[in-house]
Length: 123
Image (cartoon, rainbow, N blue to C red; front, side, top):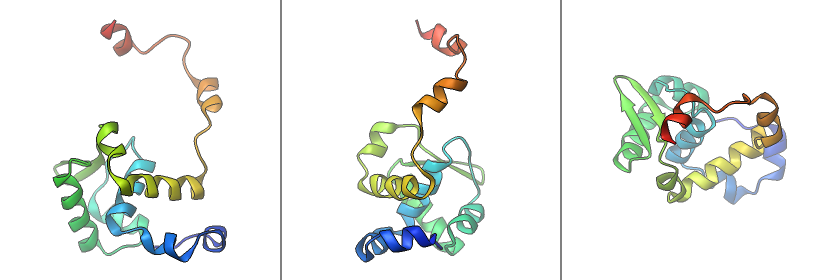
């Protein structure tokens, strides 16, 4: 998996070695939590062999960290479960470092004034 020069210079050797294939897969899916991907697409995006990604996805599924339907994989929406997985925090930190953290104010600028109908249904 390639990294940008800034990450290369600012990240310690230990941190770079720490990110396992499951951590990379989970980090990628977390960064793209609104989509589902095929294993080969994930492999291509993170620069890891498809077999290694498939194995990682199976292990992550066994831990209920990802969901699988047909040939597609997505990160779980169970935030409690994700927060309990130590690799999630490392992967999220690395992706935030590379892509930047989300800016809540930017989200608010584009948020609708009225709540989504599903929120009203719950009340």
